[in-house]
Image (tube, rainbow, N blue to C red; front, side, top):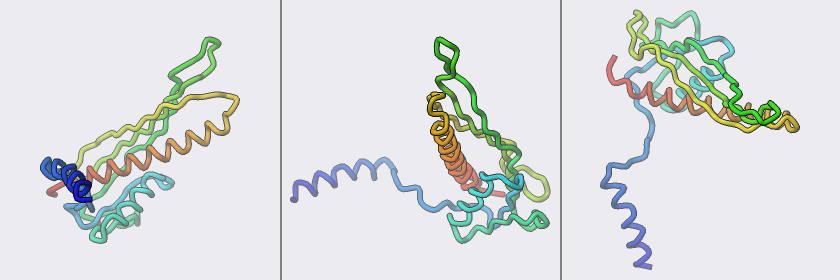
Length: 166
């Protein structure tokens, strides 16, 4: 029993020595954020939900009449889903696709000064394709796009938390 405990402690010591620690709750340099995005944007909705639940100190505003009430404005310039053919078989039928989700955004103060300049993030996934099971592949594509959206929201969260001064 002591030997097992000693072995498990020996594996923890190198992690502590290298500075490893869990990510924890993000800390933001601002107390209020306005999200400016297209009306039906699923990414903006997920970002709002994630920011609201990540910390109780940050107030997320979405009322289009009050963008200047926030310390910073997150502007979702564009989000685009792409489906690109990357592989064909000998008879010219699609065998592999690449799914891409591109997001352009910027973070600015109400007076127009950029905190984070116009930035583009890209997520991509490869998927095999078979026309005999097209419906299930369509469902798989939707799941992959949703997964990429969640990954992008996490990246956005980390970028917003990286802002140190306004």
